[in-house]
Length: 269
Image 1 (tube, one colour):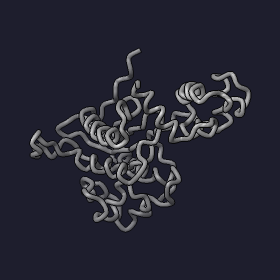
Image 2 (tube, helix red, strand yellow):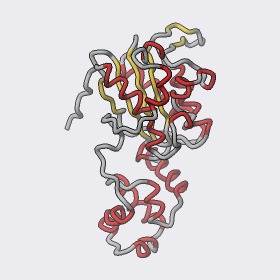
Image 3 (cartoon, helix red, strand yellow):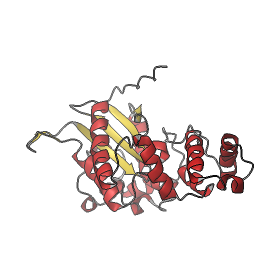
Image 4 (cartoon, one colour):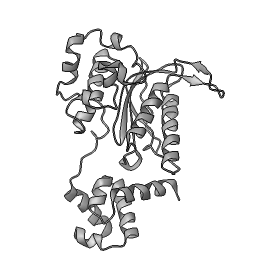
Protein backbone atom coordinates (compact mmCIF):
# COMPACT_ATOMS: atom_id res chain seq x y z
CA UNK A 1 0.00 0.00 0.00
CA UNK A 2 1.54 3.35 -1.03
CA UNK A 3 2.22 5.73 1.83
CA UNK A 4 0.21 8.91 2.14
CA UNK A 5 1.63 11.90 0.27
CA UNK A 6 3.08 14.65 2.44
CA UNK A 7 0.74 17.63 2.76
CA UNK A 8 2.30 20.69 1.12
CA UNK A 9 2.57 24.05 2.84
CA UNK A 10 1.58 27.17 0.91
CA UNK A 11 3.86 29.30 3.11
CA UNK A 12 6.73 26.80 2.95
CA UNK A 13 6.67 26.53 6.76
CA UNK A 14 6.38 23.13 8.45
CA UNK A 15 6.21 21.70 11.94
CA UNK A 16 8.50 18.68 11.68
CA UNK A 17 9.04 15.80 14.10
CA UNK A 18 11.83 13.23 14.12
CA UNK A 19 11.67 10.22 16.42
CA UNK A 20 14.20 7.54 17.30
CA UNK A 21 13.63 4.11 15.79
CA UNK A 22 11.49 1.85 18.01
CA UNK A 23 10.82 5.01 20.09
CA UNK A 24 14.29 4.62 21.59
CA UNK A 25 16.25 7.46 23.15
CA UNK A 26 18.76 8.88 20.68
CA UNK A 27 20.18 11.68 22.86
CA UNK A 28 22.00 10.53 25.99
CA UNK A 29 24.43 13.24 27.05
CA UNK A 30 25.24 16.89 26.44
CA UNK A 31 27.44 16.08 23.44
CA UNK A 32 24.51 14.33 21.74
CA UNK A 33 22.09 17.17 22.37
CA UNK A 34 24.56 19.88 21.36
CA UNK A 35 25.48 17.99 18.20
CA UNK A 36 21.87 18.21 17.06
CA UNK A 37 21.75 21.89 18.06
CA UNK A 38 24.85 22.49 15.92
CA UNK A 39 23.33 20.53 13.03
CA UNK A 40 20.27 22.78 13.20
CA UNK A 41 22.47 25.86 13.43
CA UNK A 42 24.29 24.85 10.26
CA UNK A 43 21.16 23.72 8.38
CA UNK A 44 20.64 26.97 6.42
CA UNK A 45 24.25 26.91 5.19
CA UNK A 46 25.66 24.79 2.37
CA UNK A 47 29.39 24.23 1.74
CA UNK A 48 31.37 22.87 -1.18
CA UNK A 49 33.77 19.89 -0.80
CA UNK A 50 36.53 22.32 0.22
CA UNK A 51 34.45 23.73 3.07
CA UNK A 52 33.63 27.03 1.40
CA UNK A 53 30.13 28.39 2.08
CA UNK A 54 28.16 28.49 -1.18
CA UNK A 55 24.65 29.16 0.21
CA UNK A 56 23.22 30.61 3.42
CA UNK A 57 19.51 30.38 2.70
CA UNK A 58 18.71 26.69 2.27
CA UNK A 59 16.09 27.05 5.03
CA UNK A 60 14.98 29.14 8.01
CA UNK A 61 14.56 27.62 11.47
CA UNK A 62 12.16 29.46 13.77
CA UNK A 63 12.12 27.04 16.72
CA UNK A 64 13.33 23.65 17.85
CA UNK A 65 13.31 21.39 20.88
CA UNK A 66 15.55 18.34 21.29
CA UNK A 67 14.17 15.73 23.70
CA UNK A 68 15.55 12.29 24.64
CA UNK A 69 13.86 10.35 21.83
CA UNK A 70 12.53 12.97 19.43
CA UNK A 71 12.99 16.45 17.98
CA UNK A 72 10.50 19.19 17.11
CA UNK A 73 11.48 21.74 14.45
CA UNK A 74 9.59 24.74 13.07
CA UNK A 75 11.24 25.25 9.69
CA UNK A 76 10.70 27.14 6.45
CA UNK A 77 11.89 25.95 3.06
CA UNK A 78 14.49 28.07 1.28
CA UNK A 79 16.55 27.02 -1.71
CA UNK A 80 16.01 23.40 -0.68
CA UNK A 81 12.66 21.73 -0.08
CA UNK A 82 11.62 20.18 3.21
CA UNK A 83 12.57 16.62 2.24
CA UNK A 84 16.07 17.66 1.17
CA UNK A 85 16.55 19.68 4.35
CA UNK A 86 15.40 16.93 6.67
CA UNK A 87 17.62 14.38 4.93
CA UNK A 88 20.57 16.71 5.48
CA UNK A 89 19.70 17.16 9.17
CA UNK A 90 19.09 13.45 9.75
CA UNK A 91 22.22 12.31 7.89
CA UNK A 92 24.52 14.65 9.80
CA UNK A 93 23.28 13.53 13.22
CA UNK A 94 23.23 9.84 12.24
CA UNK A 95 26.87 10.12 11.10
CA UNK A 96 27.86 11.57 14.48
CA UNK A 97 25.77 9.07 16.47
CA UNK A 98 26.88 5.95 14.60
CA UNK A 99 30.53 6.92 14.89
CA UNK A 100 30.26 7.72 18.59
CA UNK A 101 28.30 4.60 19.54
CA UNK A 102 30.05 2.30 17.02
CA UNK A 103 26.92 1.28 15.15
CA UNK A 104 25.51 1.37 11.62
CA UNK A 105 22.06 1.55 10.10
CA UNK A 106 18.90 3.57 10.60
CA UNK A 107 18.46 5.78 13.66
CA UNK A 108 15.21 7.64 13.00
CA UNK A 109 11.82 5.96 12.77
CA UNK A 110 10.38 5.81 9.22
CA UNK A 111 10.23 9.14 7.42
CA UNK A 112 9.85 12.35 9.37
CA UNK A 113 6.36 13.55 10.25
CA UNK A 114 5.27 17.03 9.26
CA UNK A 115 2.33 19.38 9.06
CA UNK A 116 1.99 22.60 7.05
CA UNK A 117 1.85 25.90 8.91
CA UNK A 118 -0.07 28.40 6.80
CA UNK A 119 -1.72 30.63 9.42
CA UNK A 120 0.12 33.11 11.66
CA UNK A 121 -2.13 32.19 14.60
CA UNK A 122 -1.12 28.54 14.33
CA UNK A 123 2.51 29.57 13.86
CA UNK A 124 2.40 31.37 17.23
CA UNK A 125 0.61 28.40 18.80
CA UNK A 126 3.35 26.07 17.62
CA UNK A 127 6.06 28.30 19.05
CA UNK A 128 4.51 27.91 22.48
CA UNK A 129 3.79 24.22 22.02
CA UNK A 130 7.34 23.34 20.90
CA UNK A 131 8.98 25.29 23.73
CA UNK A 132 6.64 23.77 26.33
CA UNK A 133 7.43 20.19 25.32
CA UNK A 134 10.09 19.67 28.03
CA UNK A 135 7.56 20.80 30.65
CA UNK A 136 4.99 18.38 29.26
CA UNK A 137 7.63 15.61 29.40
CA UNK A 138 8.41 16.51 33.05
CA UNK A 139 12.00 17.38 32.19
CA UNK A 140 11.70 20.83 33.75
CA UNK A 141 9.11 23.05 35.40
CA UNK A 142 9.51 26.02 33.01
CA UNK A 143 10.62 26.22 29.36
CA UNK A 144 13.50 28.55 30.25
CA UNK A 145 15.01 25.83 32.49
CA UNK A 146 15.51 23.45 29.56
CA UNK A 147 18.89 23.92 27.83
CA UNK A 148 18.22 22.13 24.53
CA UNK A 149 15.51 24.22 22.93
CA UNK A 150 15.50 27.52 21.06
CA UNK A 151 13.65 29.17 23.95
CA UNK A 152 17.02 29.88 25.54
CA UNK A 153 17.89 31.78 22.38
CA UNK A 154 14.66 33.75 22.47
CA UNK A 155 15.22 34.98 26.02
CA UNK A 156 19.03 35.10 26.18
CA UNK A 157 20.95 35.18 22.91
CA UNK A 158 24.24 34.52 24.68
CA UNK A 159 23.36 30.91 25.47
CA UNK A 160 23.27 29.41 21.99
CA UNK A 161 25.68 29.42 19.05
CA UNK A 162 23.24 30.90 16.55
CA UNK A 163 20.36 33.32 16.36
CA UNK A 164 16.92 31.91 15.73
CA UNK A 165 15.57 33.52 12.57
CA UNK A 166 13.49 36.69 12.67
CA UNK A 167 12.79 36.75 16.41
CA UNK A 168 11.51 40.30 16.40
CA UNK A 169 9.39 39.75 13.29
CA UNK A 170 8.00 36.52 14.72
CA UNK A 171 6.84 38.17 17.92
CA UNK A 172 5.97 41.64 16.63
CA UNK A 173 2.34 41.11 17.69
CA UNK A 174 3.32 40.10 21.25
CA UNK A 175 4.43 42.52 23.95
CA UNK A 176 8.06 41.50 24.78
CA UNK A 177 7.38 42.12 28.47
CA UNK A 178 4.79 39.35 28.39
CA UNK A 179 6.78 36.90 26.27
CA UNK A 180 7.86 34.58 29.10
CA UNK A 181 4.42 34.76 30.67
CA UNK A 182 2.85 33.85 27.32
CA UNK A 183 5.02 30.77 26.76
CA UNK A 184 4.51 29.63 30.34
CA UNK A 185 0.74 29.59 29.89
CA UNK A 186 -0.46 26.07 30.68
CA UNK A 187 -2.86 25.61 27.77
CA UNK A 188 -3.70 22.59 25.65
CA UNK A 189 -2.32 23.67 22.29
CA UNK A 190 -3.87 21.36 19.69
CA UNK A 191 -0.79 20.61 17.58
CA UNK A 192 0.47 17.57 15.76
CA UNK A 193 2.10 15.46 18.45
CA UNK A 194 4.43 12.49 18.32
CA UNK A 195 2.19 10.42 20.53
CA UNK A 196 -1.21 12.07 20.13
CA UNK A 197 -2.44 9.28 17.87
CA UNK A 198 -1.07 6.58 20.14
CA UNK A 199 -2.64 5.20 23.30
CA UNK A 200 -0.09 5.25 26.13
CA UNK A 201 0.06 1.81 27.75
CA UNK A 202 0.56 1.20 31.45
CA UNK A 203 2.71 -1.79 32.54
CA UNK A 204 -0.31 -4.06 33.01
CA UNK A 205 -1.54 -3.38 29.50
CA UNK A 206 2.01 -3.79 28.19
CA UNK A 207 2.30 -7.22 29.78
CA UNK A 208 -1.07 -8.27 28.37
CA UNK A 209 0.44 -7.69 24.93
CA UNK A 210 3.63 -9.51 25.89
CA UNK A 211 1.68 -12.37 27.48
CA UNK A 212 -0.33 -12.95 24.32
CA UNK A 213 2.82 -12.99 22.20
CA UNK A 214 4.88 -15.24 24.50
CA UNK A 215 2.06 -17.43 25.86
CA UNK A 216 3.13 -16.75 29.45
CA UNK A 217 0.67 -16.06 32.28
CA UNK A 218 2.72 -13.71 34.51
CA UNK A 219 5.88 -11.64 34.58
CA UNK A 220 7.88 -14.17 36.58
CA UNK A 221 7.09 -16.89 34.05
CA UNK A 222 8.25 -14.62 31.24
CA UNK A 223 11.46 -13.82 33.10
CA UNK A 224 12.28 -17.53 33.28
CA UNK A 225 12.64 -17.64 29.50
CA UNK A 226 16.13 -17.40 28.03
CA UNK A 227 17.48 -13.92 27.31
CA UNK A 228 17.42 -14.55 23.54
CA UNK A 229 13.79 -15.69 23.69
CA UNK A 230 12.81 -12.68 25.80
CA UNK A 231 14.45 -10.37 23.28
CA UNK A 232 12.56 -11.90 20.36
CA UNK A 233 9.19 -11.53 22.11
CA UNK A 234 10.06 -8.01 23.30
CA UNK A 235 10.94 -6.94 19.76
CA UNK A 236 7.43 -7.92 18.61
CA UNK A 237 5.82 -6.28 21.66
CA UNK A 238 7.63 -3.00 21.00
CA UNK A 239 6.27 -3.02 17.45
CA UNK A 240 2.82 -3.35 19.04
CA UNK A 241 3.24 -0.30 21.25
CA UNK A 242 5.13 -1.04 24.47
CA UNK A 243 8.09 1.21 25.25
CA UNK A 244 11.71 0.15 25.61
CA UNK A 245 11.67 1.08 29.31
CA UNK A 246 8.54 -1.04 29.84
CA UNK A 247 10.30 -3.89 28.05
CA UNK A 248 13.15 -3.59 30.52
CA UNK A 249 10.82 -3.56 33.54
CA UNK A 250 8.94 -6.63 32.31
CA UNK A 251 12.06 -8.69 31.60
CA UNK A 252 15.43 -9.57 33.08
CA UNK A 253 17.21 -7.31 30.60
CA UNK A 254 18.48 -3.81 31.33
CA UNK A 255 17.43 -0.79 29.30
CA UNK A 256 20.98 -0.31 28.00
CA UNK A 257 21.21 -3.99 27.01
CA UNK A 258 17.94 -3.78 25.08
CA UNK A 259 19.01 -0.50 23.47
CA UNK A 260 22.26 -2.03 22.20
CA UNK A 261 20.54 -5.25 21.11
CA UNK A 262 17.79 -3.56 19.12
CA UNK A 263 20.34 -1.26 17.51
CA UNK A 264 22.11 -4.37 16.19
CA UNK A 265 18.82 -5.92 15.09
CA UNK A 266 17.89 -2.75 13.18
CA UNK A 267 21.29 -2.84 11.49
CA UNK A 268 20.74 -6.43 10.42
CA UNK A 269 23.90 -7.71 12.13
